[in-house]
Length: 392
Ligand code: PLP
Image 1 (cartoon, helix red, strand yellow):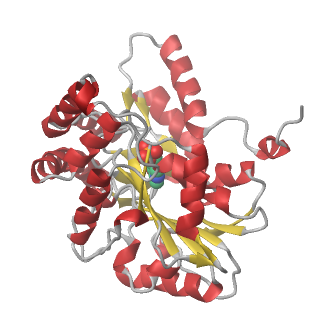
Image 2 (cartoon, rainbow, N blue to C red):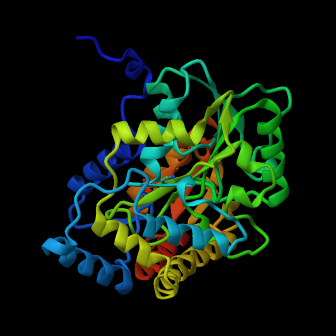
C-alpha cells in the first residue's frame, strides 16, 4: 500500500491541536489556576427548547413502526429543504428545493465539494484563512494561491484581474478576522468569478451574526451569483449545533462547468459517498427555522454578541487595534507592543491564564494578530477583560 503523499505537505499538527497541547501542559504545571478559554470557536449555550422538543418527538417517531424511517433522501428531507428555502426567501433569495443539499456541517462540504473538480484547478484563498480550505486542498494536491488581507483593506481582499483562479473560497462574516464583505465588494467577486469562469465557494457559517441589514447574508443576494457560486451554510453557530451536526450546501441549477451541471455532479457524489443526516437531527434543524426557533436562537446570538461588545470596548479602551465583533462573534486584534502571535499567546496563557488563538495559525498575514471569540460565558468574558487590562 502507498499513502497519499500530499499528506506529507501538511503541517504536522492542526492549529487547535497545537493550542490544546500547550494549554494542557500549562494546566499540568499550574493545576490551581483557572484558565479561561476564548480560543476555539465552539458554542457554550445549550440547544433551544423548540429544537430539543422537535428532536424528542422525532426520536419517538423512530421508535414506532408506522412512523419509523430508514435511509432518507440524499439531498435531505423535503421538510428541511423547504424550511431552508423559506429562510432564504426572507432575504429575497429564491431557491428551488433540489438546490439545497442537507449536510452534516459546513466543514465536511468545504473540503468534499472539491471531489467533483480536477486536481489541476488553481484554488484562491484569502489569507488569513479558515485552515480547512487550505488543508483539504493540500490533501488533494491542488495548487493554492493567496490573496492578502491586511489592515489597509480591512482584512477583506478584493479580486485582482491579473490573478488566474478556478476555485475561490470566500468566508463572510470571516473566520478568523470577523470582517464582513459589503454588497458592492461581493459583486466585484461575483463579476470576477463569472469573467474567469471560476467557482466561488461561499461560506456563510456566521451569517446569523449579521445585524446590519445593509450587509449581505448570502452570496445569492448578488446578481450573477447563481452562475458562479455555491454556498455552504451551517447550524453550528446559528443554533448551537456544533455537537448536533447539521448544515447545508446550496448548488444553483444554472451553475455549469462546461457541459456539466454542478448540481448533478454534486448529487452524484453525495449519492455515492454520503447517506444523509439522521431524521431526528433534520427535525431539530427544521425547528430552528420556525418563528420560535429563530427567536430562541437569536437570543443566544445576542448573548454572544454582548460578549463581543465587552471584548471590543475593552480593547478600544486599552488602545489595541481590532476588527470584527460587530457582525461576527470573532474579534481580531493586533498583538500589543509588536509581539508575534505565538509570543502573545504564551504571554496571555502564562501571565493571565487566558487562551486565545494566534493569528499566525490562519496564515502568514495573521502573524502579529490574535483571535478572541465571543462564545464563552458572560462571567468568563468579564473576568478575561479584567485580566487583560492588568497585563503588563
Ligand atoms: N466554516 C467556518 C468558517 C467555520 O469557522 C467553521 C467552524 O468553526 C465551520 C465552517 C464548520 O462548521 P460546521 O460545524 O458546520 O462543520
